[in-house]
Length: 160
Image (cartoon, rainbow, N blue to C red; front, top):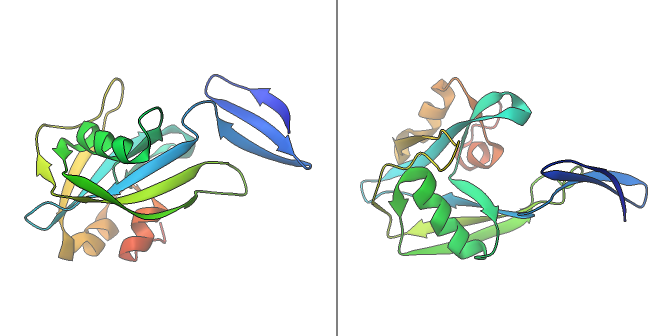
């Protein structure tokens, strides 16, 4: 493997004549599907510079020292103000294997309850949405933001 470029947060690498991007830290990510006791799905919305738009997504973050399960619980609380008793791994795989080495693990949160306001940490400006589960598809269709494909596929709204 050969290094082509090194930026502040990413590396561009080449393996077998194929160039791809890798994060310098947090090469694995998690996303959390969380539902309140009242049957509301918890979604996040924030501006994402690579696509120059606001994106609606499941609470998510990069795995660092704590491991994926602990990161899933931590990100759920930091981003949304909700905590949970446990998380269950639903799926794990590459996000876009033609361009990045990133792997994402998708978890379902159990025993979800509110403990704070959420909104993220540092410079994150995350809007938290709580949408009744039976209304998610219609709600997503009305949003003026990009819908992350993980959410879109889960709720049949992947065309935007």
